[in-house]
Length: 350
Image (tube, rainbow, N blue to C red):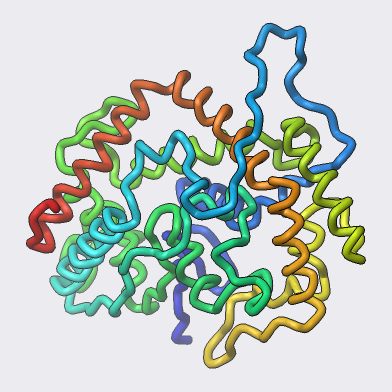
């Protein structure tokens, strides 16, 4: 059987969605929390703050107003590359993978590595402004759903690995056609070349191939600290904003207790399923468009994303304080990968 392996995003997944290793599972966990965080963070309007005013912790700051993509910045962003930088690294990465595969007589399929024109923190903060929900509904366009949103944070779009290449690509075999396969496959070799001799966040030289992703795990940890994924606790500002949002929606004729209930209403949540073959994203219904339009307006009125940003900001600042040296190494590793990527593709720093 000629089985296609899907990579989505930066994960090797067969149609039965079996992950190849634990590191990829951790990456999947982080990605799922970014894209579907509003589902996992069940924010109950009557919940209490997870900060005890008598525990000696710092007081919470007021939520800033979030209305545009420019308002979505978070403290950990400074340790990452921007969209163009991530695009350059991924372009070099796939060029190196293609070079490696060619040595085994295999051809790397073409892959889009252009910069993701979608705000990196939009899904973290529940901001709908880039989706044009009055026209596209909660998914945004098909390109946004399948390509831009998954790539917004780390620059990696989903792509298909032909079945005959998978073992060499990922390194699940030691040799192919009598030739030794690099540890962790051609992807591992590409990552090592990009990392160069930069230390990893653990201080070990050279950095392990995929360890740069620790930055996204720390972002995920901050998100979990701001609002636990099992709904057991949350920041008070988010709870209060959610209550305002619910009241706003009710005034418009929609009864939901939290944004995730509207966004993932069973009547239209199935549209998020990844299209297979020649099937395409189903168009939104009139009811979804009406709901999504009211939802976006109410999120703005309740400053829902602003409340999330205030909570996420404080959680990320705590992460930075607790991991200063690790984060400095991660930033250096990202910059090293960028510089080495420029050499691979023959460009000069701008």
